[in-house]
Image (cartoon, rainbow, N blue to C red; front, side):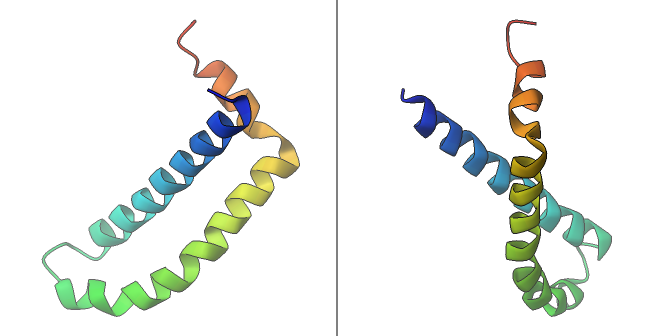
Length: 77
């Protein structure tokens, strides 16, 4: 597999997992039984996700931490 394609897929997977974790945290914070509270926060959550994703990607690129993280998470350890 092309190394650039592999990098893009890894970053896309990370972004997907991070956003999913934030949604799960929101649901757990608002108690899963209280569906109306979750529905009330979803529009704000939808507005915040692109902003948080942008900052995550910008800081990861700025500090060049993505390559370091995957070096330590390799299967060779």
